Image (cartoon, rainbow, N blue to C red; front, side, top):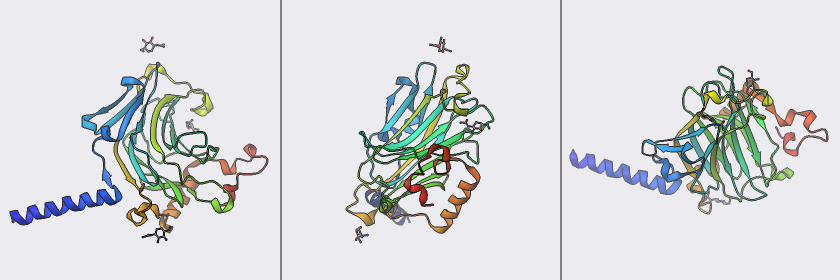
Amino acid sequence: MPFLFSFNIRLILVLVFISCMVVKYCASNDLNQDFDITWGNERGKILNNGEILTLTLDNISGSGFQSKKEYLFGKIDMQIKLVRGNSAGTVTAYYLSSQGSSHDEIDFEFLGNLSGEPYTLHTNVYTQGKGDREQQFHLWFDPTNDFHTYSILWNPQTIVFSVDNVPIREFKNMENIGVAFPKSQSMKLYSSLWNADEWATRGGLIKTDWAQAPFTASYRNFNANICNNNNNNNSCKYLVENLDPVNEEKLRRVQQKYMIYNYCTDNKRFPQGFPLECSVT
Ligand SMILES: *[C@@H]1O[C@H](CO)[C@@H](O)[C@H](O)[C@H]1NC(C)=O
Ligand SMILES: *[C@@H]1O[C@H](CO)[C@@H](O)[C@H](O)[C@H]1NC(C)=O
Ligand SMILES: *[C@@H]1O[C@H](CO)[C@@H](O)[C@H](O)[C@H]1NC(C)=O
């Protein structure tokens, strides 16, 4: 029995090790290994031996962090608990971005609100420096009560934004109709908590209430399934993953029920006609 037991344990360890090598599917249990606090001095902290990361915002400064590594394709999950109470005026940005003037970017931004009023989840995709592809949602839960998982799946065919594993937005590769797609610049993961009360809440009508400061957002259970070695393409299932019909249906329902803004239906903004990708639904 002891022999069998330790044999099994060893086998499991070897399997875990191999799967880490192949897919890098390793839940990180030390955020110190994945991220650097890059803004806000002591306002950003990694606590409990790397289990949890917190960003705060006060009347002097916000704070932020970035990943140590760069990614080119994969699936990235993070659990986030947003600023609670009266968070109006605050923005928690969580995004992948490359460098330079023709950068690519995949954005989640959480716009705070008065207590009891819904957060707005704002999303955008930049390709070769061009964004203007906003879609906004209300969530089906209070994102300040508990941690929820926010994910980005990114491969050469598609980008899928998900919340608690429910897809909320897909940006497909539409190079065949002349829309640039992010597929050659690697990106780092960034997050920051900052004051944007000029525009964030009800278009800037509601200002940050500094009596509520410091504002805090928390992060944990970062999971990066990275496919950087794309010469070894069968080693990463996320390189070929697409939405299956069940998830396409989920996406459609979320968009019907929870989407509050879609650039592709904003006539006033595009009097000369919608961007090319809007013709593909
Ligand atoms: C910032 O807030 C602190 C604590 O509430 C207060 O003492 C300080 O005067 C404020 N500073 C500014 C620049 O508003
Ligand atoms: C804040 O609450 C108002 C009223 O419910 C809502 O219209 C708005 O979308 C919410 N979000 C922001 C960021 O203003
Ligand atoms: C890797 O990708 C190439 C080109 O996209 C394809 O022809 C090949 O079958 C793929 N290999 C595997 C093992 O999936």
